[in-house]
Length: 292
Length: 225
Ligand code: SF4
Ligand code: SF4
Ligand code: FES
Image 1 (cartoon, rainbow over the protein chains, first blue to last red):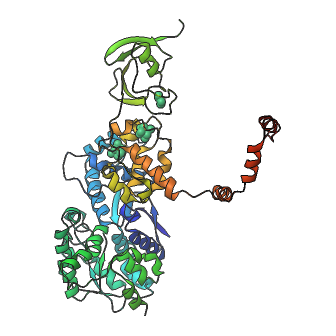
Image 2 (cartoon, rainbow over the protein chains, first blue to last red; image 1 turned 90 degrees about the horizontal axis):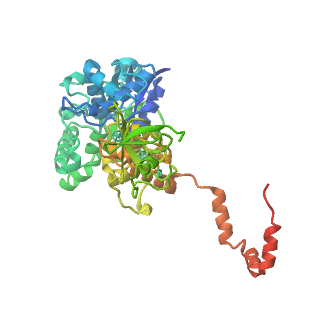
Image 3 (tube, chains in turn brown, purple; image 1 turned 60 degrees about the horizontal axis):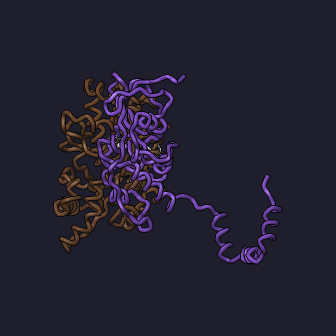
């Protein structure tokens, strides 16, 4: 079985346990084991844009150093936010020897210097590039027939350009996964609209508006559920449906799933690994539909 | 006098003191009276946090004044008090989850993993690791790592994110102790026995004995080898 070092991030250890558990189960079913990085540090969740602010890259370097110390040059993550922060930060550090030197000398208590060679890839890239959607299709035991899924990318998998895991303007990685699972990917022009991200803390109404638009777009195109790869997108599109309904009484809810939850179902795994109890909108009807 | 004298600088002023003294006693030897900033003098209370620097070295070091011997060329200053923020809570009303920390100590989540706290800790605790354990909601891990913390305050003084690590750590230990640690079954059992009055007759008998009889009984009691 192939193995890759896996960086969970904080949210997957808490509110997004449904993302982590389903992904770990899928990876075992696909013979590509996720092996959790022994010591890892919160990525900081936002990439620091200030050019002279190195402090906010220390967490990244320490993570990269831990991977280096395990003798590896790449690792993966599931959360789009962790991916984006770690990817951008590691790019900067790997490409900039001066920064690396400053950071290494700051971390004088570390046994080793970080050498600038470790790269991060998103789990979706493993599915596409290392396992391959053909193989996944072969391993599907319970095709998600008759299910129409809206692939939601949000921002962090696609922007900025240099960290995009697919064509930033017209990505297809999630659509291809959906097809491999035997479901139908609906046309979804709002798939890379921002969900409002952190504004959800201070500007609930802004996020409610965005969620309403994005979900409306998915529904008008016939989606039965929305697929996401980010706990914050999941919160804004799933949990915030409560506030959307308060504002728009005619609003009808729609389940929001992590792509790994859908994949676990398609691979015929025990639905318990999906921890659907942590999804806000009920998913039971959808699951029953697949099982029949 | 056979002990060697060393040259130290207390708040910039030079003194010669015996080299076998701790920082704390050296300060007193030099004539300072320590009213705040000392307690047990045994390395347990955490009151004597101090920072110092060695001659010609840029590094600011941190330690316990009662546990660290003076060395030639030390620049010293004693910290009387660490003015750190502390949240007030009722442990019975808290939940052992990450949200509790987000509410009571939101600054904990600003940690940038610089590890400055760990470098400052005189107890050699992996302070950053317990702060990070809390960021990811692992209260048990945070409680275990921070177990030896004596709340000296040095980590908090050095933290660029202005986290008060030790108050966060003690909250983790309290939550762990109250809600997460496995309960000892035999203690529960014994409490039940006590509540049922299992020993009441014995105690009553003892209460009725004369002082002399009691002494006799005490002398002839079973002793563990
Ligand atoms: S964790 Fe902080 S307060 Fe506790 S002993 Fe270490 S430096 Fe002192
Ligand atoms: S000093 Fe503060 S910011 Fe740095 S690792 Fe410790 S807790 Fe985190
Ligand atoms: S005086 Fe108590 S630890 Fe130093």
